[in-house]
Amino acid sequence: DADVTQTPRNRITKTGKRIMLECSQTKGHDRMYWYRQDPGLGLRLIYYSFDVKDINKGEISDGYSVSRQAQAKFSLSLESAIPNQTALYFCATSRSLADYNEQFFGPGTRLTVL
Amino acid sequence: AQSVSQHNHHVILSEAASLELGCNYSYGGTVNLFWYVQYPGQHLQLLLKYFSGDPLVKGIKGFEAEFIKSKFSFNLRKPSVQWSDTAEYFCAVNAGGTGGFKTIFGAGTRLFVKA
Image (cartoon, rainbow over all chains, first blue to last red; front, side, top):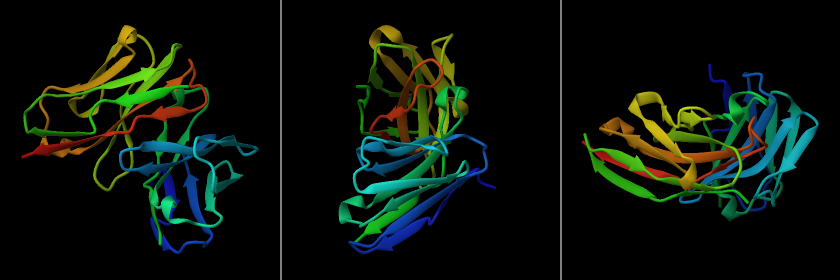
């Protein structure tokens, strides 16, 4: 079984719709991250969380929000989707004070906003 | 602010050719360095990492990378590539001795290996 799972794997939606992407992990890690990947831009950090009560903006948080429902779950929401949010979204986890923040990635969610 | 620069966006090689992918970062303090690989249709996986000690690190599948502190570089190498190495490669930097707070990724290099 995968240690970091994401649902859905693919989603097509329309401009203005609210979308939630979910991430779950069984690694027991305390840190979780959401990235988006765009061709030629690599991975850019949207939000990160170091524990259930900790939420931090990354470099491109505008238009997104997150919820850390439990240590194992970290959801990303697009309140009103727009076409330039079409991208591949990755969730990642890491363990604090160990492994020097080596990150473990989920399989990704491909989101298309029409 | 930290940044990571990967010199080549696209690389095309024939099988058995040698590979070197450049990575430079901008940060003056202690860094942890990573190379991740993303095979077509898959998620990112760790290829190798450097925290301290021997600046020449070996990873999976015959890859290695050399940390040159004076050049702020962490180039990835493989003596002889295979068709199965076709993938996108990301260099990443994390500041701080025990992991700091976030990791910065380079833009990625797409490698295509011709059979």
